[in-house]
Amino acid sequence: MTPNATGADAVIDAVTAVLLIVGALMSLGAAIGLLRFPDLMSRMHAATKPQVLGLFLVLAAMGLQMREWWVWPILAVAWIFQLLTVPVSAHMVGRAGYRTKHRHPELLSADELEAVVLRAAGERAAEKAQEADSAMPRNGNGGRNGRNAGADGGPSA
Image (cartoon, rainbow, N blue to C red):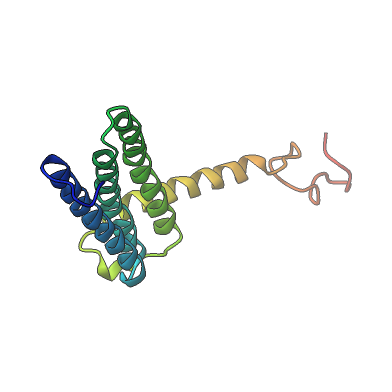
């Protein structure tokens, strides 16, 4: 805090500087990964993993530099909120990207989701076919449309 700080203040300032630099580098790595990685899954990984660690390091540096106990619970809540929301949002982006074919299957070593998606698509197609079949209008004469209904050309009873 002061230019001629000695002892514990100098150590806290040095640790704060290291945490800020490493946290900023982690966030920079996440940004570079978003720009450079080839597909959605890789970019999603780059956006979530180093970003959360970088944020933790920056928040820890802020808590050390403030030198007040009351700031730590607030910083912990901010970090926990990130820990809870980042994986969920990455999961949703990954699912949307997989279902809209924004992926490179040749880059995947194993596609464990393909069988599940194909099975779900088959079940959904069967349900739609069954709904379409049950929604067809029936006129009471075995599905005939009335052309051959009666011998005299009138409707049968």
